[in-house]
Image 1 (cartoon, rainbow, N blue to C red):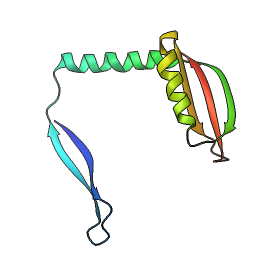
Image 2: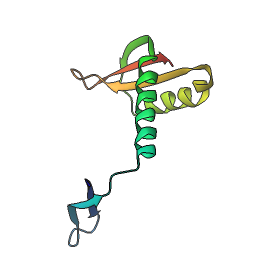
Image 3: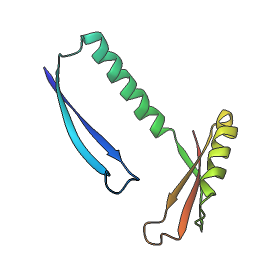
Image 4: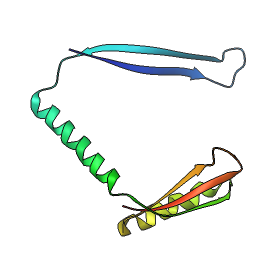
Length: 106
């Protein structure tokens, strides 16, 4: 048997008198999956690891952070995924006013 845990959050914001925010955990005992399912899960994990090792960083640049910058990255990802290109955007850990834009080949 395996123990599965889900964290659930209930909340309602807006009305000050009745605002609440509750987090609770749900514990469920699950039977062990059949061997064929376990093998498929292992194969999927191996494939993910292989795919991650094939990702190549082509370029990285720091730019000034903007609220709409993610829209450009999303558009590029949707448009150029057929060309095996992927784009990433992350905030610079040292300066939150800067964003790091990265181009990957998959």
